[in-house]
Length: 384
Image 1: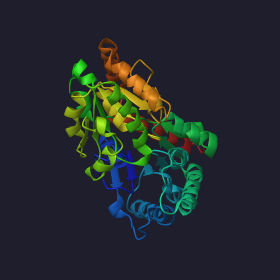
Image 2 (image 1 turned 180 degrees about the vertical axis):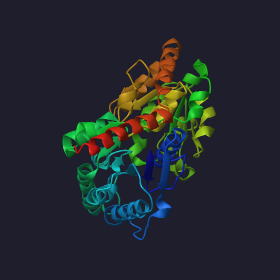
Image 3 (image 1 turned 120 degrees about the vertical axis):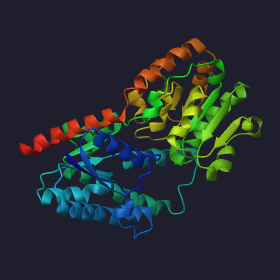
Image 4 (image 1 turned 90 degrees about the vertical axis):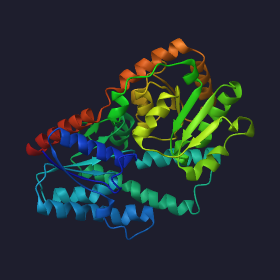
């Protein structure tokens, strides 16, 4: 199968959405498929304002890039990331190419913005210098979701709640939307699981950028409760060094000495960190794939996370992890403290988390994508 893949991002294997595309491409090639990819360097970025770029420039650039490559070669599948691909999808239909057009979502913008608007108001955090203008632009960008649903042959999403939203609110046909969970880096699965210990259980780990949608204020509130209740507890937070001072400022002086900030590092370099901690914490306001949560489960950490995105698909409450409603910092703290104080239960949850995560391979992700591509090609070939 010949597959054309495009994304408006640098091909960084350690990043979120782009890393997903890189890993899937490698897995597809390992299965014997031919994958041609184009990235942000292949697309014009004359408009420096990101929302204006997404609204006015990127849809046309996606269309141009696909037309150029389809003029040089024949593909079975054209797959582009995010709803800005709608114009390329429409052009694919207009030109009646044989290829099926697949749109891949790493997280749905309209769902994210709805969650963030609510929590900006709830937490009293400003939305930027020009919130009304930003909201207007985002509304126009959200309209692209309806268009990409209309013109694509199929859509791939990383969580069931995203599929449900596309079907309920954007008219997507259920059989044209595939839920394919993102994979975990193979080294996370190949290395034997380390024993859970009482020492590890008192060490919390958060791997999340310092950004509003990651809920740093709510995370700090929950962790502060834990640190105040348990003098042996500590938190390690991996995020950009540019934000360390701001992140540390969320904690009171009384517990700040037990909060350790580390800069970003490659995925494989995180392995030793995961293996020296026992509790994985995350309190995102919105997520799609929740990749860091899956990585924590792969290393047998006791995941305590807000119930968002693929966390809802992966975590069975009290069996292989814990989840709380977004905003329930007190409930999150209670769950963390309970996990810290029950080593036998933690050992069982650790093993169950690992069993869940070992199924999340990039090979499985690629195989399921290929099965979906073939179903779409069959439908298109039969005129459905």
